[in-house]
Every structure is written in C-alpha cells, then in structure tokens.
Image (tube, rainbow, N blue to C red):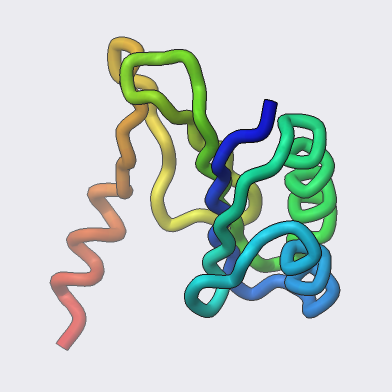
Length: 104
C-alpha cells in the first residue's frame, strides 16, 4: 500500500536529487514529497543514505504510533531525534545553543 513520504536533503551530490525526482516532487529546493510504496521508500532512502557524503537528510513517513509518523536521519545533523516515552522529539545540544548566542 502506498503512503506519503517527505524527504529533506542538504549538501548532497546532484545524482541524489535526480534519483529523488524520479519518484517524488521537489516542492521547494531540497524538499521532496510523494506517495510511494514501502519498498520504493526503502530503496530511495538506501540510495540517499549511501551517497550522503558530507550532507544530511531526513525522512518522514507514516507509522503505527501515537504521532502517526516516524523520522529517520542520515549524515551530520545539527538536531537529533530523541525518543521520549514513545514520542519522537527533536533535540539540540545545549553547548551549540550557547555558542550561537555568544556570536556577535
């Protein structure tokens, strides 16, 4: 059964963009949305995560949990997913936040 997926990428090679646009719409730069089967989603994510290089990517897809979706990340992330009693939350490092505030 097909379901909606969202993939956001940054600083990835051009051929990754090409692979994503074969199956998904690029609604804004580097943000891809579409409806694909679980098998296609897995293959796309495998292609993205294997070629990520110094870039980063996030995949959001439907899941049978309280939030109704799951997140998967690849590459170097400024934000990290944290499981908090069954809910996925986004966390940043306290050190990086204080460093950002200290910048002129």
